Length: 64
Image 1 (cartoon, rainbow, N blue to C red):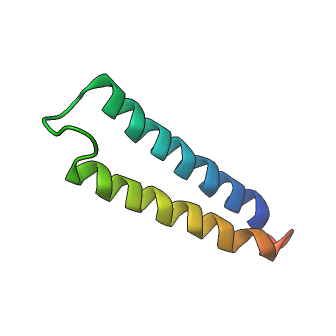
Image 2 (image 1 turned 180 degrees about the vertical axis):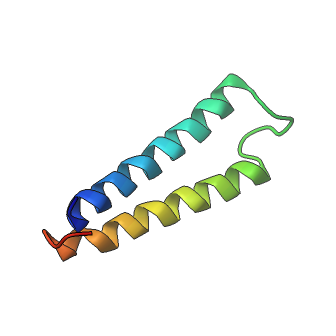
């Protein structure tokens, strides 16, 4: 696996995490209207994973 592939994997997992958090919000789970504190932390973590993936993309075809 190359660093580019690892970066794309991290980015895909981060996007799936964001989509999952909004999916939970659409289902009405939890006691908060809108985005609650746990979802904010989840979005922050998913954003960090996406940023990590973005930093790996320019490293190209080097082995991970």
